[in-house]
Amino acid sequence: MLDEYDIQSMREHVAVAVLGGFEDEDQVRTWVERELGADDHALRDELTSHVAQLFREHRRREARWRKPTANDAIDRAFDTLNERGIIALQNPGYTLSDGWAEAHEAASARPTPARGAVFYHRQDLECGVAGGGLMLAFGAFEDDLAKRDAAGMAVAQEVCDTLAGHGVRATCDGTVHSRIEILPFAWRKRRWTTAS
Figure 1 (spheres, one colour):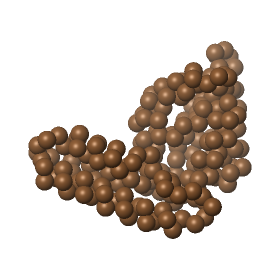
Figure 2: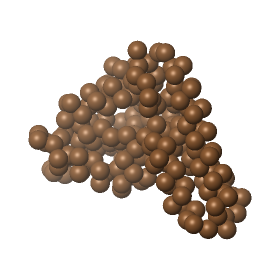
Figure 3: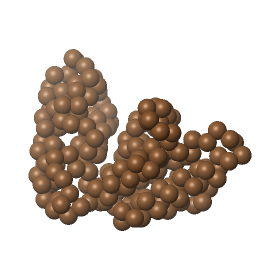
């Protein structure tokens, strides 16, 4: 039996999943069912009903997004970076390790070598959904250790310039051991509509 703290944590996870824009209703409902197991039918029914309600509300909100959102601009910037040889991923796993594993996997699947990668993971997504901006991990795929830091900073600069070119405000402190910060914005990641 879950206590109130666990139930509230599940509600928060569901809210982030709905607002985050990366999971569909079936995926979120399956997560709830898996987390609860077969023990608590009443709670499972309550939470799956809550999931359906949140998706209905979110669909209505999204239908009113007439202008491009900051998330639309981030999507376009990441598409541009991918075209230019920088693996740009959104929500690849829960940790930095997860993100780098997916970035290396994506790089190995490319027909041409990737120069580097940039991404934000699930914990960063949670901050972004809450209105706190996004922290982006970045780095270069450079085998020569003597060149790796400079190559990493070149990736960071290209990421910041590309984001700026799409109207997204981002900062980097100029060190390869830091992260790029996209300044706080209203999170509006589309599922059902397209930017006009």
